[in-house]
Length: 373
Image (cartoon, rainbow, N blue to C red; front, top):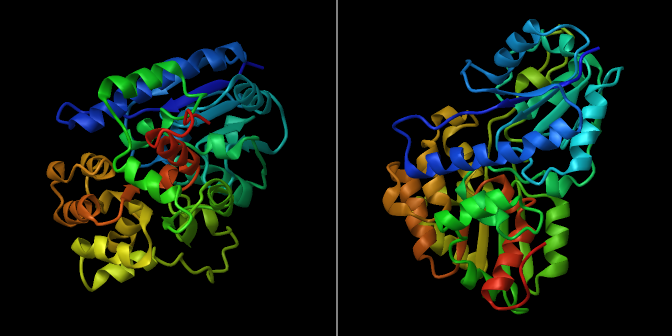
């Protein structure tokens, strides 16, 4: 039987892409050069990088699977996924891809970023799943696969989904040197981190964390921050909540579609508009770490194609409001930048597995410790 194949889905920056989008593509390509030898040492056949487009992740992977022989194992991931993947992680993925049986292994069974399967034949019937996050759930619910998870879920939950994630990775000791160099050359850092550090270090203060965070991340923050923690946990699994993956193929016709995304913070902003974000947060806490993608999903729906373009989202994460074309997101970002309390905006990594990196960056900004996990 041939050795497993590693498939990396990568989207290069288009010619008209903005500087932050190009920076992200460059950092993902640098990460790929770091990850490639990890998999080759784990004895895969090769690492195949796919850059052509398809209407959906599911359709592209199904087409590829039909080109490959049966009983060939495969490891599937997007570029930018699991930047803290180590040698033993790569070996565990390849071991499952080289094995047999209805098993798969992933970094997160509910929202996958990397997934290994022993037989590509099962992927030939994939429906048009919108993203790779849904793959283990589809295999588990529709094909009866046993879903295994790699150890180190918090470490492997960090993704390179935007330039802010690259800035966060500067504060992890296991970050590949090539990524750290890209971040430093670009001059990336976390906005308002010194102010947030004062909040996290003040026993009389309170920080709000809202979005796709988890009990594990909040427990870590409560143990390591001196301030009180107020949390709003909402829309976990936002990107993996595809009806195609979740509805069992019973054919009885009584399965209802998932409800649309709803955000408590988004509802609170509805009456006053995005410009009132600073006032709202200041009434609740002394600082905030917010998942802005949940706010966008609340306003525009879960389909990211209806959201502001990538460049706008990346600029918002860095509080560069002047670079944002979307009026609503620009107003939200200006409000966060000028708020009387520090507010960070970002995606899943910021409010989830990246919280320890935020705390360590804050400690470093305040001159307390080296700031590296």
